[in-house]
Length: 346
Image (cartoon, rainbow, N blue to C red; front, side, top):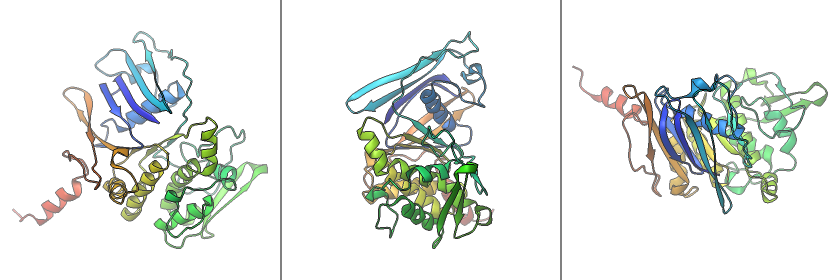
């Protein structure tokens, strides 16, 4: 698990240290620094720049100075700090060689959505659904038979540990009665999914958008992955952008609960969200006792234009799922709108 990330002069942060928990919620207005945190963790895990984000000089704070990303991990009884620094004078990257034991899986907000066909991974060297969810059929093909879902993560009314049954069970939380199928043709390196015998393009976006998240969480938490962990392979850390995308509010609340259950089963989830329903789903999981209060933390990010920097205010929870503070603009738009609606007309 990642316990802490420390960023100096990296994009909108001059000097910020964030404590991370089994589930960490990143919230705030647009362009306030949420995605920057995920980008920093991804850079740390890869030991390199990310494709499409430009050269090193574009990642430095506008206030100048060398930048660094320090990450503290806890692996059993051993804690260590991995970091790298890039000199201001250089446009090229000179990162330290990092021995990362804990893989980081990232699921982007720009997930593919409904697709007629999906690719299979030819080299079989990775166990990730892909940044855009493109390898979801490959993961099903690899783990479906030999995996079992922990009891805490089993879908409602699903009594067995089978991965496919629980994927279908969680999809039914979004669309009652839906049936899930998948097929693949190894000779053509392609796979496809079906929902109640319909191709995804005839069903809508919600099920296709949530499928990579459900498959990724359940496969990571499966018994097979736990056996791998016991042999010295650590469970991946899961970074998710906007898990609420294309979901009905009820489905968004379900997603919050689902990710909280995942965190309680050893899958560290760091999520960027604009959804109060996802946030409240996590709070409900705490209240019902499925997740301990100290296993979750939230951050509200705010950009100061005059200082050209972002700040992060931590949000802590008690055992009832209540927050210790509620900053302005932190999931309060519904209340503000209702107050405006019930106020007398001027």
